[in-house]
Length: 85
Image (cartoon, rainbow, N blue to C red; front, side):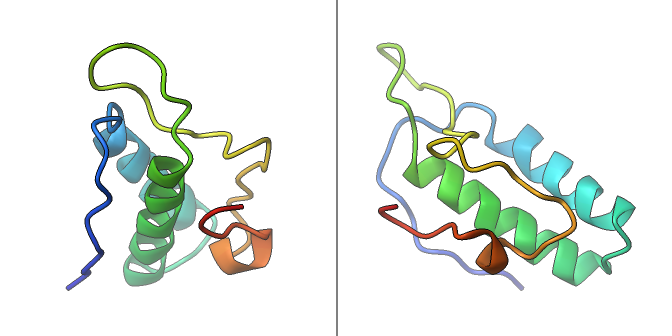
């Protein structure tokens, strides 16, 4: 089971699609399901933590995270992604 802290924001539009895409990318890169899912969850957490704040309602995630690209072949920790960066 995966457990993550709740991030208090209304900007979560696209979380499901982003999570599914992250899992698929990991599986396509040869990761097992557990590793691919864990990495996808960490990516979504980072994308929520770096929302651009667009719109007046539930806005989109911060997929670019300040210009840091997502590399499907490397674990999140190896990509320099951290809360508050």
